[in-house]
Structures are given as structure tokens and as C-alpha cells.
Image (cartoon, rainbow, N blue to C red; front, side, top):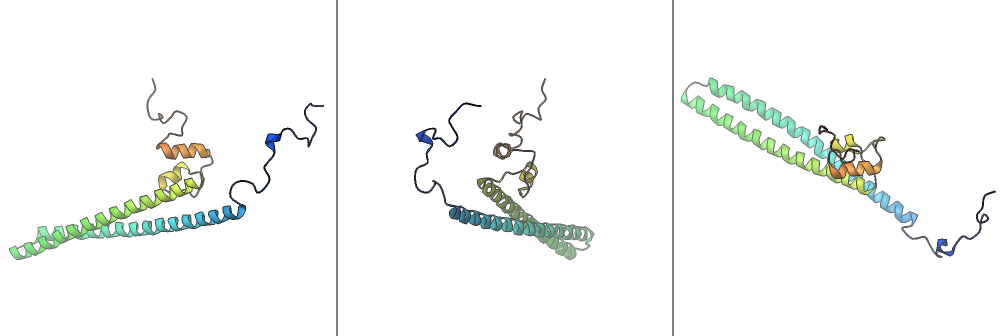
Length: 176
């Protein structure tokens, strides 16, 4: 038989919990916070998806404007006569401007999408959701990487490329 105090015996006064409710939030408070966080995550995800759709639409517009500009360029080169050439040049110049504007808008949407994805990623990290490497690259952490512990996941996200790897991010360098 092993030594030690008999089962159920008091082993020291310091382990006794003080009377009253346990410290920290109550289960009801925790549930309210969890629901609020889930709603916020859903809103962030929806905003990101809306931006993604808008970005794809913007890409189609850029492509369309590019095709239009190339067609007008061919017409400009084929134009004969001073008036026809001037008209074709003006149309081509307008198409260039429209394409540039479409590209600028697409860039703004891309930046907004990346910001939304980053905000969603930060929100999930604050909730303690581990984020996989693939999902981190794609800005979506709906699936966790089972090969990586949460601390590795966090250090990976915090340090960039491969801070969570055992070689401290030196995997790309040759060792002699």
C-alpha cells in the first residue's frame, strides 16, 4: 500500500476555495460573449464574401475594358483620313481611361478584401481558434490544420512564413 494521507483528508489550508461563486464569468456571461463573437464572425465572413464577389465582378470589367481598348486600338490603326483617325484616337483614349479606372477600383476592392480577411483572422485568433497554414494563406481559417498545435499556429501567424518551424524559418537557406 502506498503512503500519503487517507482519501478525502484535508491536505492543506491553501487549497481550500473561498466561499461564494467561483471567480471569472458565469456560464451565462460566457455564452452571451460566445454568441456575440459568433455573430461578429458571421458578419465579418459575409462582408469578406461580398467583397470577394465585387472583386470578381471588377475583374470582369477590367477584362472587358481591356478587350474594348484593344479593339479600338486596331480601329485606330486601320483608320483612314484625318477626321476618322482623330475620332478613333479619342475613342481609344477614352477606353484607356476607363480601363485604368476599372483597374484602380479593382485594386481598392482587393485591399478591402485583404483587410476584411485579416480582421476575420485576428478575430478568430482572439477567440482562440487555431489557424492552419493553408487557411492563413487564403485568409480563411474555417478548417484547422491537425498537424500543427495551436501555439505553432499562432507563432506561424505572428512571425510570417515559417516562424513556427523547428529551424526557425531557415528552411529555405542552404546549410554547409
